[in-house]
Every structure is written in structure tokens, then in C-alpha cells.
Length: 361
Image 1 (cartoon, rainbow, N blue to C red):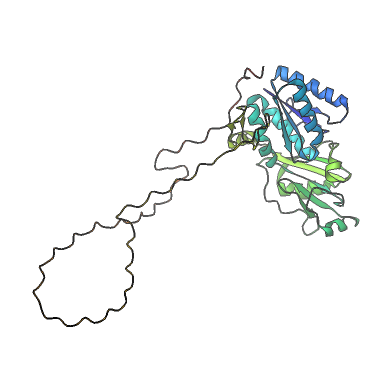
Image 2 (image 1 turned 180 degrees about the vertical axis):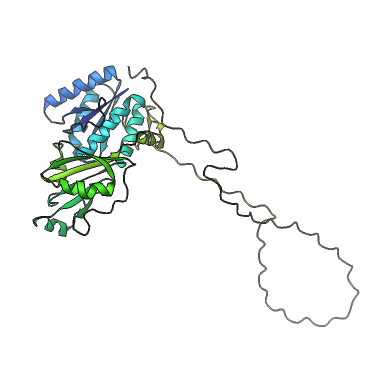
């Protein structure tokens, strides 16, 4: 079993009651290190593995704590996964990982964290983007931030987009949304909750909006003390199962932990995966080789007239060539899943967690 620990001021949202990640501050004082060591040592004794989740944009404190704990406790069973998410969305992913921790192996749990983050729709309403450091705000948008009544929709994901809210276009184009039913969490700090309820919620077709307290790190992330942060996720009972089935893990080349990340979250070994090269099609046989076209000849000079000689003996008829191979006729479309032969064996799925190995005890 794996214990999920969140380093940073990211309180739980309560979406998974009974299965929440442990929260530890990332302060630089010695008291924070002692508190982290106390939590980690107890988790290693009972669970065997610890997975630390922390913001990628605030990684210094978490990296220091993990390195010191691994050195002082002489263990490599403390993994680390940074996520480029706002505080509210990061709290949702951490609690989802804690909910799945008893059912999957530690390496698999770390591998599905980026996939869970990619399935969220997170962002915030901001009254000003003048101090926003994470986004593609243009100079004109910075200038408009100083006008009264301005509002901006900022979405965070693979790319951070900034959209100025206007009467003609109050919400930016949404190209992806979570699987139905869509649930939303909102943290309002002197922002515009009416815009979220009347404009954004219909676009996402959310069936429920739950208000929660704003995380302490949200003001630092958004660069403003006036915001309405939101995160939308799927409430489908099989959504987490879909994520688990879509991730393919292989054993780490060094420690053997199953992982699908570029580097093992526990030993740090880079995972070099070589994709199988496509097989070359077989060379066509002699009957289907294209015959070369004869080269054009220059006009020959007229031969001198010769005296008639004896007639040449008769030559036999050339043997007929076999008929050329006709191209394959197009086949009618087949139904989904219908094949002509046995289906290829799929790649091995993620290894499910069964029991702790001897090294975890």
C-alpha cells in the first residue's frame, strides 16, 4: 500500500471522504522537516511506500524535504511527483490518488497522476492579470486590467490561456470537457461567482457546483487576491477505472517498479523505451515485378541491299508468361472489433498491487 502526502498549503476538498491525502507544510524551518520525517517514517513502517505530490511551480521545499528524508531514513521508497496545476485542482488529484492507493502498485499510482491532471478543467476568474506570471497575457490585456469592471477567464492545463470576458463572448471556446456527469468545485475570494454560475456552468454542462474554502496558495498562483477559482471533473463511477486501463507500465530497468513516466519516481532511473520498428512489406515475386520500359532507340541508317540468301529455319513459339497478379479488390467495411484472424496480443497492462514486497517491509 502507498501513502500519498501533499507538500504545501493545499487543504483537502473533501470529494473523497475517508480517503484523503496527508498534508504537510513545505516551510524551510527545522520543525517542518521533523514533522515530515515523523509522517514518512510512520508511513514506511505501516504502508511501505510514500508518494509525495507537490506543485511543480513551488518545488524547492518539496525537493529538499524528500532528499533529506531519503538520506536520513536510508530508503528509496519515497517517490515524488510534481504537478503543474493550480492549488484547487492539485488538491483534487491528490485525493483521487489517495482513493486509488490501496488498489494499485506504487509506480502505477505515480504514473496515472499526470493523466488525472489532464482530465480536469481548471482555471479562475480574475479581475486583473497585471501580476499573472503563468499565462499568455498580452500587453493589451495587461493594460485593460487597470480599467474598472474588467474581467478575465484564465484556464490552466497543458497550456495556460487568458481570455478577456466581454458581453459578446463571456466564455472562451471550450474544446475539451470532463466525462458526464460534470462536477465543479469553486473557491471565491472577492471574485465574480455569478459569472461562474450563469456563464461557465452552462458551457461545461455541470450538474453540481460546490463552494469550498480558497487554498492559501491560490493568491500566489493567480497573482491576485480577487479571484474565483474553479475545477471541473467527472463524477462518473468508472472514470478512474478508465484512466487506470489507459496507462501502460513497464518495470523500471533499475529497481523493477512498474512505471510509465520518463523517469522512475522512486530511483530516478531514466526509462529508455524503444518502439518496435514497423516490418517492411515483402518484396513482390517475379510475376508482379514491373517490366522496364524499353529505351527509345535512335533511327538506324538504311542497310545496304543484300542478295537473297537461304531462308532461316523456323523458330519455336515463345512460351506464354503466367497471367499477372491482379491487385486485391477492396473489401466491404467491417464492423467495430471484427477481424480476419486472431487479434494481436495487447501490451501488458499496469500491474495491480497485491502485497508489499520483502523490501517494503
